[in-house]
Image (cartoon, rainbow, N blue to C red):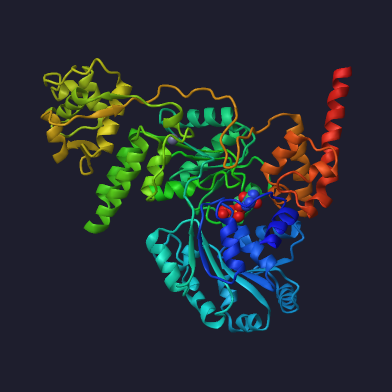
Length: 609
Ligand code: ADP
Ligand code: ZN
């Protein structure tokens, strides 16, 4: 373990292990198998990289995502770790060169795609090489229960058969109990120790805003909180992706579209810009994201509701992998509830499938409507108990009040009933507010008992009431009737006054937020904004472009922020920055110290004149 500690400090430039890392590393160095469950950004890579460096021989890393291998290897090369990858993107000569390195013991880590690993030729090569360990990344891909099943992963069981004495470490950020058991079973990891970390992502701030004018709300959010930041905006349809991206560009945001309808050349181009440049916003359908491990995605915004709580968690999980503050922002409203309920009603799935879908939708709507800590609700969904408040979700930061909605609910429901269960929300609200529209007169609904009884609430409040009633299954959507509302069995007891109902008070206006100290995984940190920060970022981008790597491969934002705050003036001070090991110190120390010195000089000259 001493060696592991030394590597952590000298090579990676980190002062201490995080969470389970130390335990996993110790366990693996001793030659044991492990299954590591750690949330995104938890630091899984170190769990196999450090043992591979400590143990003799090469660590073989199996990864399903070709795009990621390059980044991981680039990052290791920056640390002077002897790393390479083998996948279909390499030409034959380069592949042969890598195989030579493998055989002559010149590699510490080798990333391979499962297809390649499983070829008889490669397995034979492995027999002739000295192996430190096997790391199976994204191990949930082995299971059909998981969310991203890859048939080739199944055959990885061969590793235990052919290399029983080489330690194996399977890693994933998403595996429920069933998937975990399947991973163990499929990979023959019966003896593996399971290292289970909390799913919590403390640096992500969860927030749901009530849909009014989505674009304006989004603009307000970006303008106030994410100028110059990189982020992802998810929309349900391709059209909405295109429209939103175009609209943002008009407003001078560097926004790009991404969806399955674009040619693969354009998709690739947009993705590369998103990864390699700073401050690019990707407007996308869910087709975007798998395998994006850009660490400094500062926000994930949803303009439409995701499919389920799982999908929400996975999509928002792409924010803040670096542990710095990040936002999960979702705009939600009556139209979402109606659309989703309607889609479900109209779905042709079998009864049982439909019940599962219904339960998932209920959970998602429950999450949107909740007035308690969102983190608590999310983690509970994944079977974890969390001690609220988290102080980093909208409900914790600005507690939402509730009100006794018994009478209002009765009015809303009986208006549905009195008008014959044939109308949509807009019409029902007209009746409740006593509006004599043509339609109301034509149907003579100015004569029903609910006409005009709802004047003590505004139209907006009625929308909120109907939304909450639909979300709670107290009203259903009649799909045959073009979105007209109907009562349900549950609504009768409310109408009879047998049940209490509380509604949430939707917040009126978003507050202007000033950037202040925000919660992060390790400590409270302030993200800088001024000229020195810009100068440091520019230098990083310049170096990254020269080397054709993403800026975060040079320095993570967290290191850059530390450089900004500490303002190291010599190499000795620079060495203390987290994320600066010996190699990065030698390569970049002086360059960044110069940036600081130049900037300070420039500022003091400014003052003099
Ligand atoms: P995962 O693969 O679990 O999503 P990574 O291995 O990419 O996470 O790590 C996430 C981030 O945390 C990376 O920037 C990594 O360098 C950083 N990190 C990992 N371990 C430590 C540590 N012990 N101290 C400081 N930073 C760490
Ligand atoms: Zn909270």
